[in-house]
Image (cartoon, rainbow, N blue to C red; front, side, top):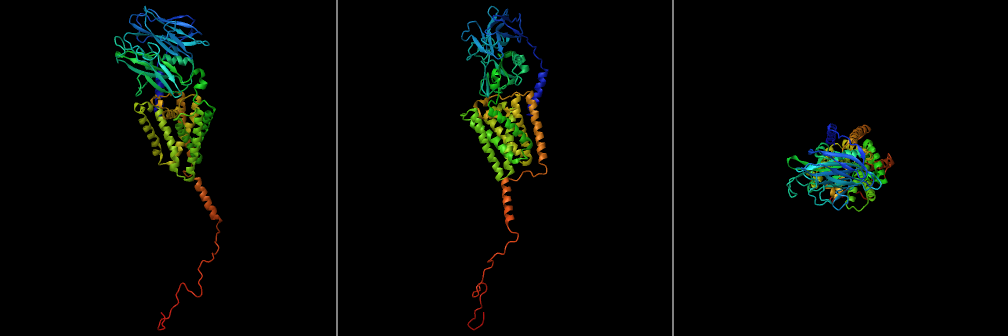
Length: 562
């Protein structure tokens, strides 16, 4: 997490030093308008023309690039619509394979009589579409994005296909065509994938368009976006990402050829939810029960952070409940036979049972090393999750599941081994750190940051087979930075408060079963008389005619006593 904080600081500094894009004015377009893009006689390789237009309901506009020079091979027209789908077509007839529909679409138009054009439609019947329109020329010596398409609907596919589930975002593109005279059979190109996070919980059009504009050319991409590592066993033009619902992310592919020539695909944006219905789809906790559980965890976090060791028996139950519920959640999720509500209810029930069991171990046996083992293992789980959340999960060696889980378990076990020499101190430290996280996790949910995914991503890794190849790299922005600092401060305060509360007290309270046994023994002693009564028949009686102790002397034959 410290490395993550340093990386955020450097990224904030780099963003401050980076030149901002000049703002674009939003202008209305009428049905049937022609929007020209005049590039001039010799356009630069990275030259881009862009503007934002409002397309009316059921309206269409024509995008045209006239008077193109002879060395232009294609013009890449793009349309990025905020909220609503638009359609980009080569012609007015909408023939199969000649148009594309979506929010981030693009087509490659080949010049005819030095002019290239496409038609942009808004088929929405209730809303105008605010669209960022861009055009870029691609010369003969530049790769053609999607020029070797084998799967997508159009012959040339410079756009990306981005889909998402509750856990994953899947990005897919098609191979680019190399510069002439090479064909698609030539393996002359390299591919880089980049992504950029938008501001957390910012669903405004201005932020949306600004993020797209930063990803339109290779030079802008290199300045603003982050390069994504390749995934073992996956094509170079495909990636899978961890989904962070409610945080917008922009994805783009850059094809690179010889002599450092490059061309960017059409970027694509997703929030891993529907921004039109974000109240229902962009929230991690969607049920009343889950929100209630979130509030309960907040109060449990306050209790554990500041008074967990002081109320040791309650701490035993709480940690047993949390750890047992977490393990149960993972195990129940593997078969996938329950809905979310049933899944959560079963996990809570099993957690309560395990909490009672762990409390009973202390109740009857009272061995500090065993009782605190679960607390330190839970802290180890949190530390390991934080390490891999902070960037370790995207290191190539940990893309292998065996390597990942081996390293993860080593960290989990290393924490209690490191802390075993001082059970009293380790218990207070573990309570404070874990309790502080339990405080900020519900707050994180309601303010829209992403520290809750420290635990969620590990659960996804264990329960979702497709998540093993996902790029975890999470957004870490101002809200996350503030909550991380709050986490550290709360943990330090919790440690100080608990040591203060426990001053002049024994390291651990006596186990209740031992206390009850001592009370029973004390009561038994109190019931005994101080001077016991004289017992009867203490000595064995001896009959008068038989001495069992001394034998009577017997006279010998001569009368001498022997």
